[in-house]
Image 1 (cartoon, rainbow over the protein chains, first blue to last red):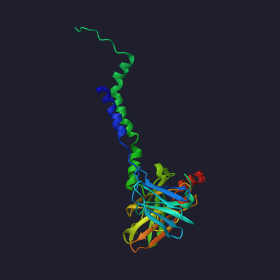
Image 2 (image 1 turned 90 degrees about the horizontal axis):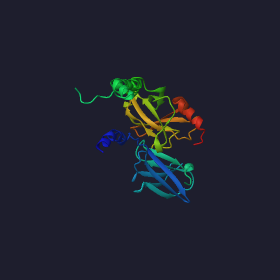
Image 3 (image 1 turned 90 degrees about the vertical axis):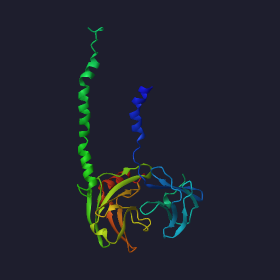
Image 4 (image 1 turned 30 degrees about the horizontal axis):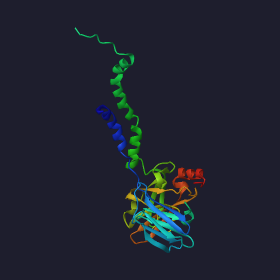
Length: 105
Length: 178
Protein backbone atom coordinates (compact mmCIF):
# COMPACT_ATOMS: atom_id res chain seq x y z
CA UNK A 1 0.00 0.00 0.00
CA UNK A 2 2.76 2.38 0.97
CA UNK A 3 4.58 1.52 -2.23
CA UNK A 4 1.48 2.28 -4.25
CA UNK A 5 1.02 5.62 -2.50
CA UNK A 6 4.57 6.58 -3.31
CA UNK A 7 4.14 5.71 -6.93
CA UNK A 8 0.93 7.65 -7.25
CA UNK A 9 2.06 10.72 -5.32
CA UNK A 10 3.70 12.55 -8.21
CA UNK A 11 0.99 11.96 -10.83
CA UNK A 12 -1.65 13.01 -8.31
CA UNK A 13 0.21 16.18 -7.43
CA UNK A 14 0.60 16.99 -11.11
CA UNK A 15 -3.15 16.60 -11.61
CA UNK A 16 -3.93 18.71 -8.56
CA UNK A 17 -2.08 21.70 -10.02
CA UNK A 18 -4.87 23.38 -11.92
CA UNK A 19 -3.80 25.72 -14.71
CA UNK A 20 -4.36 29.46 -14.28
CA UNK A 21 -7.81 30.36 -15.53
CA UNK A 22 -8.77 33.47 -17.44
CA UNK A 23 -11.26 35.77 -15.82
CA UNK A 24 -13.29 37.05 -18.72
CA UNK A 25 -16.83 38.30 -18.19
CA UNK A 26 -19.67 36.38 -19.81
CA UNK A 27 -23.37 36.99 -20.17
CA UNK A 28 -26.06 34.80 -21.67
CA UNK A 29 -29.64 35.80 -22.25
CA UNK A 30 -32.57 33.56 -23.10
CA UNK A 31 -36.19 34.30 -23.84
CA UNK A 32 -39.16 32.67 -22.13
CA UNK A 33 -42.30 34.09 -23.68
CA UNK A 34 -42.42 37.78 -22.76
CA UNK A 35 -39.64 37.45 -20.21
CA UNK A 36 -35.91 37.54 -20.76
CA UNK A 37 -33.50 35.95 -18.30
CA UNK A 38 -29.85 36.95 -18.31
CA UNK A 39 -27.16 35.08 -16.47
CA UNK A 40 -23.80 36.68 -15.84
CA UNK A 41 -20.55 35.17 -14.74
CA UNK A 42 -16.86 34.82 -15.37
CA UNK A 43 -15.03 32.30 -17.47
CA UNK A 44 -13.28 30.80 -14.45
CA UNK A 45 -16.68 29.55 -13.32
CA UNK A 46 -17.38 32.17 -10.68
CA UNK A 47 -20.76 33.84 -10.52
CA UNK A 48 -21.54 37.54 -10.62
CA UNK A 49 -24.12 38.34 -7.93
CA UNK A 50 -24.64 42.06 -7.48
CA UNK A 51 -23.01 43.05 -10.76
CA UNK A 52 -24.76 45.80 -12.72
CA UNK A 53 -26.90 44.67 -15.64
CA UNK A 54 -28.62 47.35 -17.66
CA UNK A 55 -30.94 47.11 -20.62
CA UNK A 56 -30.30 50.02 -22.94
CA UNK A 57 -32.19 51.12 -26.04
CA UNK A 58 -30.44 51.86 -29.32
CA UNK A 59 -31.07 55.53 -28.53
CA UNK A 60 -28.90 55.08 -25.38
CA UNK A 61 -31.91 55.37 -23.04
CA UNK A 62 -31.56 53.05 -20.05
CA UNK A 63 -34.73 50.94 -20.09
CA UNK A 64 -33.96 48.64 -17.15
CA UNK A 65 -31.28 49.54 -14.59
CA UNK A 66 -30.69 46.67 -12.21
CA UNK A 67 -28.25 44.31 -10.60
CA UNK A 68 -27.94 40.55 -10.82
CA UNK A 69 -29.51 38.58 -7.98
CA UNK A 70 -27.81 36.08 -5.69
CA UNK A 71 -28.06 33.39 -8.38
CA UNK A 72 -26.30 35.73 -10.89
CA UNK A 73 -29.45 36.07 -12.97
CA UNK A 74 -31.93 38.80 -13.73
CA UNK A 75 -35.35 38.39 -15.33
CA UNK A 76 -37.14 41.29 -16.98
CA UNK A 77 -39.93 41.92 -19.47
CA UNK A 78 -38.77 42.24 -23.07
CA UNK A 79 -38.83 45.94 -23.91
CA UNK A 80 -40.33 47.31 -27.10
CA UNK A 81 -38.04 48.11 -29.98
CA UNK A 82 -34.32 47.64 -30.38
CA UNK A 83 -32.13 47.31 -27.33
CA UNK A 84 -29.04 45.65 -25.91
CA UNK A 85 -28.16 44.16 -22.57
CA UNK A 86 -25.03 45.50 -20.90
CA UNK A 87 -23.35 43.34 -18.28
CA UNK A 88 -21.09 45.86 -16.55
CA UNK A 89 -18.47 44.50 -14.16
CA UNK A 90 -16.38 47.68 -14.42
CA UNK A 91 -14.52 49.58 -17.13
CA UNK A 92 -13.21 47.19 -19.76
CA UNK A 93 -15.12 44.29 -18.19
CA UNK A 94 -18.37 44.53 -20.06
CA UNK A 95 -20.40 42.21 -22.25
CA UNK A 96 -23.02 43.43 -24.67
CA UNK A 97 -25.84 41.14 -25.79
CA UNK A 98 -27.84 42.46 -28.72
CA UNK A 99 -31.61 41.93 -28.77
CA UNK A 100 -31.25 40.05 -32.07
CA UNK A 101 -29.09 37.46 -30.29
CA UNK A 102 -31.67 36.74 -27.60
CA UNK A 103 -33.83 33.78 -28.46
CA UNK A 104 -35.54 30.82 -26.89
CA UNK A 105 -33.11 28.39 -25.22
CA UNK B 1 32.95 -18.16 -1.15
CA UNK B 2 29.46 -17.11 -1.80
CA UNK B 3 26.82 -19.45 -0.71
CA UNK B 4 24.68 -18.97 -3.78
CA UNK B 5 25.65 -18.58 -7.37
CA UNK B 6 24.27 -15.34 -8.68
CA UNK B 7 22.28 -15.91 -11.80
CA UNK B 8 23.16 -13.69 -14.75
CA UNK B 9 20.35 -11.14 -15.18
CA UNK B 10 17.95 -11.56 -18.07
CA UNK B 11 18.58 -9.72 -21.33
CA UNK B 12 16.14 -6.92 -20.66
CA UNK B 13 17.36 -6.38 -17.13
CA UNK B 14 20.94 -6.29 -18.38
CA UNK B 15 20.03 -3.60 -20.90
CA UNK B 16 18.34 -1.53 -18.22
CA UNK B 17 21.27 -1.80 -15.82
CA UNK B 18 23.70 -0.83 -18.53
CA UNK B 19 21.81 2.16 -19.97
CA UNK B 20 19.85 3.60 -17.09
CA UNK B 21 22.62 6.07 -16.31
CA UNK B 22 22.61 7.36 -19.88
CA UNK B 23 18.89 7.86 -19.65
CA UNK B 24 19.56 10.65 -17.14
CA UNK B 25 21.56 12.54 -19.72
CA UNK B 26 18.74 12.19 -22.23
CA UNK B 27 16.30 13.59 -19.69
CA UNK B 28 18.54 16.64 -19.30
CA UNK B 29 18.74 17.09 -23.06
CA UNK B 30 14.98 17.04 -23.68
CA UNK B 31 14.31 20.48 -22.12
CA UNK B 32 17.06 21.95 -24.28
CA UNK B 33 14.86 21.34 -27.30
CA UNK B 34 12.27 23.73 -25.86
CA UNK B 35 14.77 26.49 -25.12
CA UNK B 36 14.45 28.42 -28.43
CA UNK B 37 10.67 28.73 -27.98
CA UNK B 38 11.13 29.74 -24.36
CA UNK B 39 13.57 32.51 -25.19
CA UNK B 40 11.47 33.70 -28.14
CA UNK B 41 8.43 33.97 -25.84
CA UNK B 42 10.41 35.69 -23.10
CA UNK B 43 11.71 38.29 -25.54
CA UNK B 44 8.22 38.82 -26.99
CA UNK B 45 6.65 39.39 -23.58
CA UNK B 46 9.51 41.61 -22.46
CA UNK B 47 9.21 43.66 -25.65
CA UNK B 48 12.73 42.96 -26.92
CA UNK B 49 11.37 41.67 -30.22
CA UNK B 50 9.07 44.63 -30.77
CA UNK B 51 5.42 45.34 -30.08
CA UNK B 52 4.15 42.24 -31.89
CA UNK B 53 3.10 41.25 -35.39
CA UNK B 54 1.48 43.39 -38.11
CA UNK B 55 2.21 46.71 -36.43
CA UNK B 56 -0.06 49.58 -37.52
CA UNK B 57 1.96 52.69 -36.83
CA UNK B 58 0.92 56.27 -36.18
CA UNK B 59 -2.81 55.90 -35.49
CA UNK B 60 -4.10 59.38 -34.63
CA UNK B 61 -6.53 59.35 -31.71
CA UNK B 62 -7.38 62.85 -30.58
CA UNK B 63 -4.08 64.59 -29.91
CA UNK B 64 -2.29 61.31 -29.28
CA UNK B 65 -0.59 58.93 -31.67
CA UNK B 66 -0.34 55.26 -30.99
CA UNK B 67 0.92 52.05 -32.55
CA UNK B 68 -1.17 48.90 -32.51
CA UNK B 69 0.02 45.35 -33.01
CA UNK B 70 -1.33 41.87 -32.48
CA UNK B 71 0.72 39.83 -30.03
CA UNK B 72 1.02 36.90 -32.44
CA UNK B 73 0.17 36.55 -36.10
CA UNK B 74 -2.50 33.90 -35.57
CA UNK B 75 -6.25 33.31 -35.48
CA UNK B 76 -8.22 34.06 -32.29
CA UNK B 77 -7.86 31.53 -29.52
CA UNK B 78 -10.81 29.83 -27.83
CA UNK B 79 -10.78 30.61 -24.14
CA UNK B 80 -13.43 28.38 -22.70
CA UNK B 81 -17.03 29.47 -22.34
CA UNK B 82 -16.25 33.18 -22.84
CA UNK B 83 -15.51 32.63 -26.53
CA UNK B 84 -12.66 33.62 -28.80
CA UNK B 85 -9.99 36.17 -27.88
CA UNK B 86 -7.19 37.94 -29.64
CA UNK B 87 -4.31 39.60 -27.79
CA UNK B 88 -3.32 43.10 -28.92
CA UNK B 89 -0.55 45.40 -27.80
CA UNK B 90 -0.39 49.16 -28.12
CA UNK B 91 2.32 51.73 -27.60
CA UNK B 92 1.55 55.38 -27.03
CA UNK B 93 4.49 57.36 -25.74
CA UNK B 94 2.50 60.61 -25.70
CA UNK B 95 -0.31 59.05 -23.65
CA UNK B 96 1.31 59.80 -20.29
CA UNK B 97 -0.52 63.12 -20.27
CA UNK B 98 -4.29 63.52 -20.35
CA UNK B 99 -5.26 59.90 -20.93
CA UNK B 100 -7.42 58.17 -18.36
CA UNK B 101 -7.95 54.87 -20.16
CA UNK B 102 -7.65 53.27 -23.58
CA UNK B 103 -10.15 50.74 -24.90
CA UNK B 104 -10.40 48.41 -27.89
CA UNK B 105 -13.55 47.03 -29.46
CA UNK B 106 -14.69 45.27 -32.64
CA UNK B 107 -17.08 47.78 -34.25
CA UNK B 108 -17.88 51.29 -33.14
CA UNK B 109 -18.68 51.56 -29.42
CA UNK B 110 -22.21 52.67 -28.60
CA UNK B 111 -21.10 54.54 -25.50
CA UNK B 112 -18.15 54.99 -23.18
CA UNK B 113 -19.57 52.33 -20.89
CA UNK B 114 -19.46 49.85 -23.73
CA UNK B 115 -16.14 51.02 -25.14
CA UNK B 116 -14.83 47.47 -25.13
CA UNK B 117 -11.89 45.86 -23.43
CA UNK B 118 -9.43 48.02 -21.51
CA UNK B 119 -5.69 48.28 -22.15
CA UNK B 120 -3.49 47.71 -19.12
CA UNK B 121 0.18 48.29 -18.58
CA UNK B 122 2.51 51.22 -19.11
CA UNK B 123 1.62 53.55 -22.01
CA UNK B 124 4.79 52.57 -23.85
CA UNK B 125 3.62 48.98 -23.96
CA UNK B 126 0.12 48.09 -22.96
CA UNK B 127 -1.88 45.02 -23.77
CA UNK B 128 -5.42 43.76 -23.90
CA UNK B 129 -7.36 40.67 -24.83
CA UNK B 130 -10.05 41.48 -27.36
CA UNK B 131 -13.12 39.25 -27.56
CA UNK B 132 -13.91 38.43 -31.19
CA UNK B 133 -17.61 37.68 -31.71
CA UNK B 134 -17.69 34.73 -34.15
CA UNK B 135 -20.27 36.51 -36.29
CA UNK B 136 -18.03 39.51 -36.93
CA UNK B 137 -17.78 40.47 -40.61
CA UNK B 138 -14.24 40.04 -41.96
CA UNK B 139 -14.31 43.66 -43.22
CA UNK B 140 -15.11 45.02 -39.74
CA UNK B 141 -13.08 47.77 -38.08
CA UNK B 142 -11.56 47.70 -34.64
CA UNK B 143 -12.07 50.91 -32.71
CA UNK B 144 -9.61 52.46 -30.31
CA UNK B 145 -11.27 54.70 -27.74
CA UNK B 146 -9.26 56.97 -25.50
CA UNK B 147 -11.05 58.34 -22.46
CA UNK B 148 -9.40 61.61 -21.49
CA UNK B 149 -9.23 63.14 -18.04
CA UNK B 150 -11.34 65.90 -19.59
CA UNK B 151 -14.19 63.36 -19.70
CA UNK B 152 -14.30 63.30 -23.49
CA UNK B 153 -14.00 60.32 -25.82
CA UNK B 154 -11.46 60.24 -28.64
CA UNK B 155 -11.74 57.53 -31.24
CA UNK B 156 -10.04 56.02 -34.25
CA UNK B 157 -10.74 52.94 -36.34
CA UNK B 158 -8.40 50.45 -38.01
CA UNK B 159 -9.59 47.74 -40.42
CA UNK B 160 -9.42 44.37 -38.68
CA UNK B 161 -7.95 42.88 -41.85
CA UNK B 162 -5.02 45.27 -41.50
CA UNK B 163 -4.47 44.88 -37.76
CA UNK B 164 -4.83 41.10 -37.86
CA UNK B 165 -5.01 39.43 -41.28
CA UNK B 166 -5.14 36.02 -39.59
CA UNK B 167 -8.30 36.99 -37.70
CA UNK B 168 -9.96 38.28 -40.88
CA UNK B 169 -9.06 35.02 -42.65
CA UNK B 170 -10.44 33.04 -39.72
CA UNK B 171 -13.72 34.99 -39.83
CA UNK B 172 -13.88 34.47 -43.61
CA UNK B 173 -13.56 30.73 -43.05
CA UNK B 174 -16.25 30.73 -40.37
CA UNK B 175 -18.54 32.34 -42.94
CA UNK B 176 -20.79 33.82 -40.26
CA UNK B 177 -22.15 30.35 -39.56
CA UNK B 178 -21.38 30.27 -35.89
